[in-house]
Length: 133
Image (cartoon, rainbow, N blue to C red; front, side):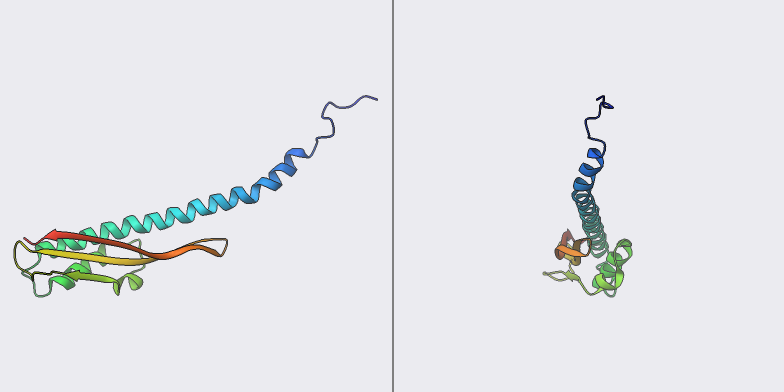
């Protein structure tokens, strides 16, 4: 009896793909979620840096801490403003005098979930210290 040459393997590739596809998609979704968390981390770091710069040059204004917090919020356009607004700290340990330091820090929550299952969660932290001018 003569055969087609496929030796009964007509659906093998489809079965292998059906076995491997769920793991492939889980890894893909994990990469996407990690990328989003990393993007939030970079946005938070950039926003804190902008806030520290604003605080270092605005020591003569009425409320330099409020100016720094406002700068952080305006620089963090990719983050949820209502979540971030209560998590910004501006400190000037030696007071607002020239030559002193100002530290702006902020935290932002993250969660990496794959298909509704939370794999990792916590807070992203960023802090920048600049010299007061």
